[in-house]
View (cartoon, one colour):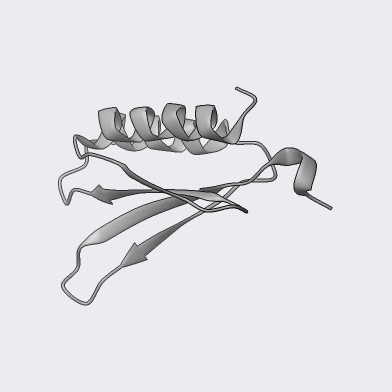
Length: 86
């Protein structure tokens, strides 16, 4: 998918389907961030689906994983416009 918005919609849908949680997007001029809560009981199939979605991202995009003090986990992806990269 070409545009950052289209890629964000695709990534959010994949992550929502894999985790069973609604993904959220935050669009800024330089990037779009997609976040989704990771359930404690994420199955191996769901984990592989999440990893496949991340592996399909272009090199201009980045992702990470946060764990809060209460042990809740969040996956985030930052999508960037390809033409604005060095």
